[in-house]
Image 1 (cartoon, rainbow, N blue to C red):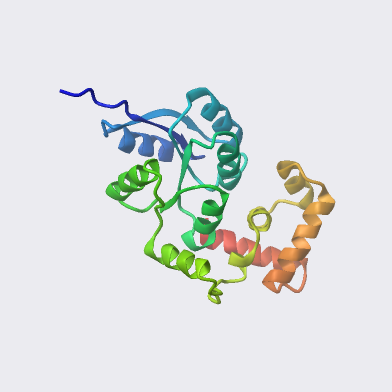
Image 2 (cartoon, one colour):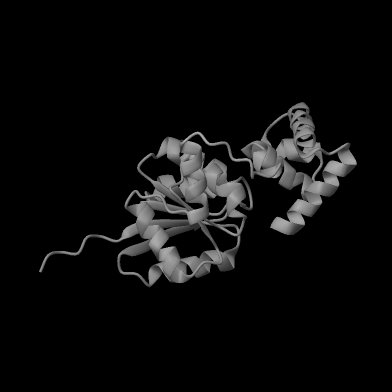
Length: 219
């Protein structure tokens, strides 16, 4: 009887302990998969990728410190052999394309079934893309050069602008946002002006209201 190949090594990056434990439990029931670590922040994730050498990183968009998109970019740049799968509660239409552009191969909503999670993991490990039919259709349209007129103003924000919009909605000042993102306050204020223009907000107060509403609706 041929020797069974070693299980694929999985690193889980999520800022909620219960979610990490749930994902780890679901993955660990499979003989061909092995959880080699868990992280809650961007810093922990990058350190554990280097330390454990995973085949696949499952990452959420929102982290205790840092951002899932930045984790994808950093891991893809430093460890190109490591594959990335986003499992998140955030709206797919807002983040799936961003995650794929950053280097991820798949995007799955946290509400999907255990079977779909395992399908997504195995597809990404095999080097295949895994997204919903709706996102796949949008990607094909873009590849054919068809403009997507259905995108909302928020979807048209850059990755950094969307991250700052979320922080504004959480009540953070420009100074605090600048410190968290290691940017100058002037740069944050410039981003705020660009966001305000793209969202059609008339002033800072209206931008704050829109940002709070967006956070309440999107988590």
